Image (cartoon, rainbow, N blue to C red; front, side, top):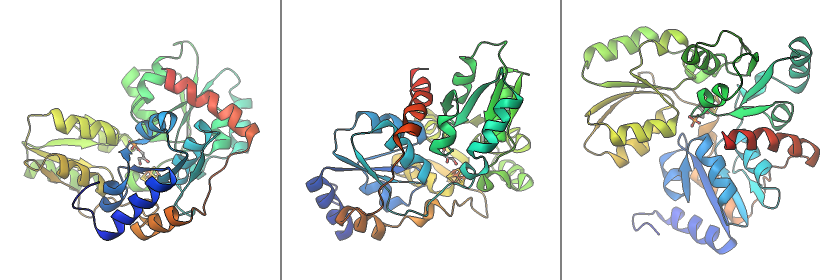
Length: 305
Ligand code: 13P
Ligand code: SF4
């Protein structure tokens, strides 16, 4: 156990280890939650970890779709979330009925579904993707097949441009945290520190992404910074990502836009709620078996790419 843990973190780890609860945290979680977690990562890394963990239960510190993904991949383990109201507004932008209608309107299209979506929507999709593998996933689909990309138009647009693939239909969903960036202020940040490397998440708009030196998922940003010789980075995604970046690279400088990008749903989880969840896990995340059986196929296809 980490010797710099606070009393509450020691208690969380003690209870979790005693009960066989594995704690997963997303890179946007508060720093003290990232520290206490057994594993921290991006959406793809969390999904992969959830498949191979040996714990008897999983506590997902993140938003609901991340816990649902863990539940879909782990039918024999109980999956919990510390804060049941932590959702992803983008995931709620498309529902099953809308997707059923879109499938009827585009009968030959392969449906590629960003994991930021409900279990029911995944179940109606052909293959899932995350921000770190979306280009690879779409590239794995024969070129002549049209692709219906849901729900993030920005990630979908990034893939479309990267692959120069005209036959992609983009659902008009977006992340409110990344979509409304002040592009002018990012430009000014870059001008004021021209030697810095500008890293952006593909949920940002096309106009913003044009400025980026490198476009990456949160996990890929961490890898990029670790390997880079550069000393200064402008980080354009949710603010908390600078926590693991600073921790792993104390000699490097990280600049974040002002005002910061904050995901209010990610911030609903507090260390106190994590303690309550390991003391008496109350908020179990379940997926009906009929939905799970279809959704797991879309997730497994992604994991195989
Ligand atoms: P990552 O998979 O890059 O961590 O992204 C998840 C997310 O919700 C970004 O807003
Ligand atoms: Fe959803 Fe955006 Fe929050 Fe990510 S940052 S969880 S996409 S609302």
